[in-house]
Image 1 (cartoon, rainbow, N blue to C red):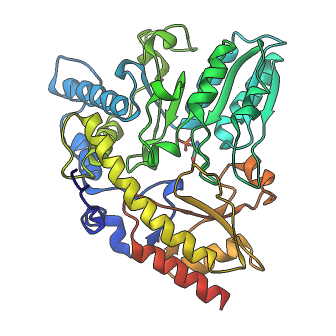
Image 2 (image 1 turned 180 degrees about the vertical axis):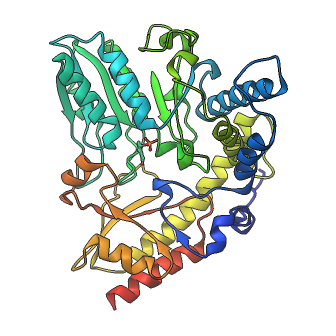
Length: 404
Ligand SMILES: Cc1ncc(COP(=O)(O)O)c(C=O)c1O
C-alpha cells in the first residue's frame, strides 16, 4: 500500500503573504487568508484586456473564459454541473434571491422547514419568505448537550405539505455535520426541495451534491482561500423552472438569468485559482481536478485531525474551559467559553498576543441561544489549510496565561 504523502504545512504557509504579519489565524470560519496564486489570478485578470463577456475582442474573450472556467471549477469542487453554477454577491444574497423565487409558488398551508443549527442566512430568508406568503414555518432543534441534529428531528417536521427544507451541511458555530444524505431521502420522499448551506462544510470536506442529495447547494469561496463572493449549485433542469425578476435586455439563459448585472470577473479568476490551489494541496495528487481534490482533501483531513487532537487535548487540560463542539461528525471548528471571562475578553486577550480567535454568535444566533450562550456566543477556533502546530501552541499558551 502506498503511504500517503505527508502534509508540509511550511510550504503551504509560504504561499500566504498575510501570514508574514505573524498572527496565528483561527478565524478561518469567518474567512480564510489568501494564497499568492489567488492574488495573482485576481491581479492578472485586471492586468489583461477585460471587457464584458463576448467573443469579438480579446477583452470579451478573456471575460468569457474567466466565467466558464470559474463555473467549471466550482462544479469540480462540489461535484455539480457547471451549467448549474450561479454566482452571487454572497451566500446570503443568493439565499434571499432564491427564497423569493421559490416562495412565489407557496400558498397558505404549505410548510417550510428550518433548523436552529443553521447560520441565520439559511434561516431568516426562509422565515421571511414564509411570512410573506402565509406559509407555515417548522423548526428543527438540535441537541445542545451533544451538538447532534438527529435525522428523526427533521423527519418529524416533514409532511405532504412540506415544500422546502433548509439545512446546513456543517454548523459554522460548533462544526456539527448532520447526516444529509439520509435527510435528503426523507425530504424527497414527501416531494420537497432541499436547500443546503455548504458555506462552512466546503472549507473542510469535498462535497458531492449528488450524494448529499442537495437540490440547491451554496458555498462562499472566501471560506476556502478564494475571494469574497458566493456560489449556488443546482441542476440546470431545476433552474430552468425558476424565473427571477430581472432586467429586460439581460439574457434568459440558465444560469446567467440569476446573475444580476455584470459578474466580478477578477474575483471569478480568483475562484478558479482557489480551487486549483486546493487540488494541489497534495503535490503528488494525479488525475482530473476532481480526483486531485479528493486526494488533497484526504491529506488535509490527516493534517486537520492531528491539529484538532492537539487543540482538544490542550483545551481539556483546563477545567474552566467548556467546549461546545461535541457532535460525532464535525468539522475542526471549536466553540468554547472560559469560566469567569466574557468571550470578548478572551478574544481581546488572545488578540493582543497575536492569536486571532474571535468571539461572537457568528450569525448562528439560534444555535448560540439554544446552547445557552445567548446573543454573546463564545470563542471560535477554526482550522484552515495553513494552520500549524505552532499556531495551536500559541493559542494554548495564551489561554494558560489568561487562566494563570
Ligand atoms: C455556515 C455559513 N452560512 C452562511 C454564511 C454567510 O455567507 P456569506 O457571507 O457568503 O453570505 C456563513 C458566513 O459566515 C456561514 O458560515
